[in-house]
Image (cartoon, rainbow, N blue to C red; front, side, top):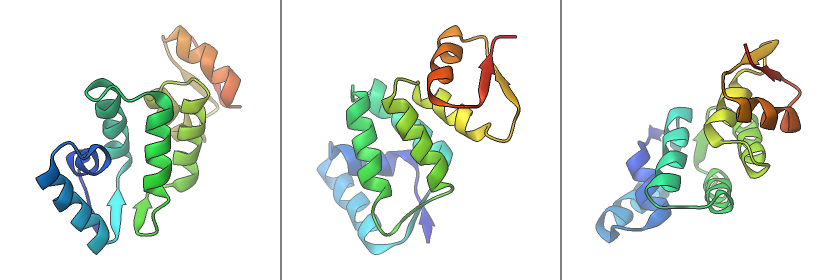
Length: 129
């Protein structure tokens, strides 16, 4: 098994550089691939800001990618929640924070939008300090 960095996923998902896309595709075809949570989070950010992907496009790309037999992620249930909550309007990074805080009694944030949105998607309490 090998792990990949964000730029490998970006080339694979966007195919914006044919030479690098072919190399990324070759890696994904040849190996079992581990994708760290930090790479998933950074990939979402790059797709959203640099490539102007919409929420639905990002969620579709991740669902398809993580559905490949040779792709392994740290916690599929966690990432599934993140994708689901992102589709429901929660910021992707906030969804990651919320999902990672599942064992905590409460998550505090100064982000009023996050607090309000989190109440709609999770039983984990998110509140202002």
